[in-house]
Amino acid sequence: MRATARAQPNIALVKYWGKSDVSRNLPAVGSISITLDELYTSMSVEFDGALPGDVLTVNGEDDEAMLARAGRCLDAVCGENRQRARIDSQCNFPIAAGLASSASAFAALVVAADSAGGREHTIAELASLAGGASGSAARSLYGGYVELENAGDDIVVTSLCSATDWPLKVVVAVTETGPKRVGSTEGMEISRKTSPFYGRWIEQQDADLAAARDAIAARDFAKLGEVAEHSCLKMHSIMWGSRPPLIYWNSVTLECMHAIRELRSRGVEVFFTIDAGPQLKAICTPGSESSVTDALSATTGVRDIMISGLGDGARLVGDD
Ligand code: DP6
Image (cartoon, rainbow, N blue to C red):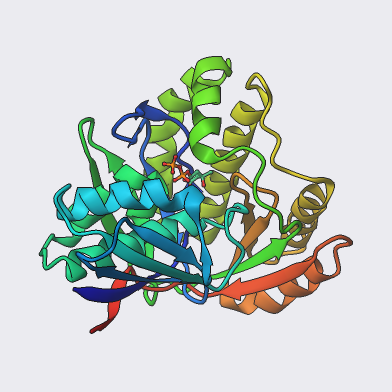
């Protein structure tokens, strides 16, 4: 009745922003991501009929705010008649700061719940269930380069290429450590309802997905970087054009972006992406990792640097 699973966050290269069905949390667009290695969430689920209600601790502290969402995710995996659960989440990186902590959390949660509850869902089914809790979580069920297809009534998630087949590096420049200003779920709805660019974004997504898929198949770093930066900046343009505007960057985020562009102009293989938070994620080839780390460390205002390779999808790490 108890299981522990581990999952890593993923970083989208072709972004997901917008939902076609809020109640089922269906994305309006497909997306492509890379799953990280060194950052992780470890999630234990224990069903216990004696508990008066579900309990969730995150890094040892009670977390009332996330409890209802975690409980609904357990209902989706194990059925609403399940026993109450003790859920314990341990995360080795900042939570809710645009580092995809909800992706690794819900990916690990569905795997742990499935095992603790004695269910035997396939990975594809677990991905779909994780996506119901948080769209990006569906991608963390798989490792390496992952595509989430918007299949209308459901999502289909597949691995395009393993981490070892194209072992790029990710250098995260942490520019702020507080929680994000507006959560993705709320931000996406604000954009859908108010941004004049939202419709064009939806129309163009298939072309960006095709370009990224081709670049990954050809291991074409420059082409992947071009489409990834375009997708990132287009998503932030929708955010800036929303009412109220969603501005997730700070001045250091922008400095980091310039530093990456400067490095690239000198021949370093690197590109950036930024999510719903102020951190900049630089994706580079292994040979460029030290130049990228040095440049971001030297950027005034960068508080911390985290380096990760690419890794595997969510998996069980222990059953009691
Ligand atoms: C900017 O998956 O956090 O990181 O489905 O509402 O939980 P919900 O949203 P979430 O959104 C991720 C948005 C993004 C881009 C991406 O990861 O594709």
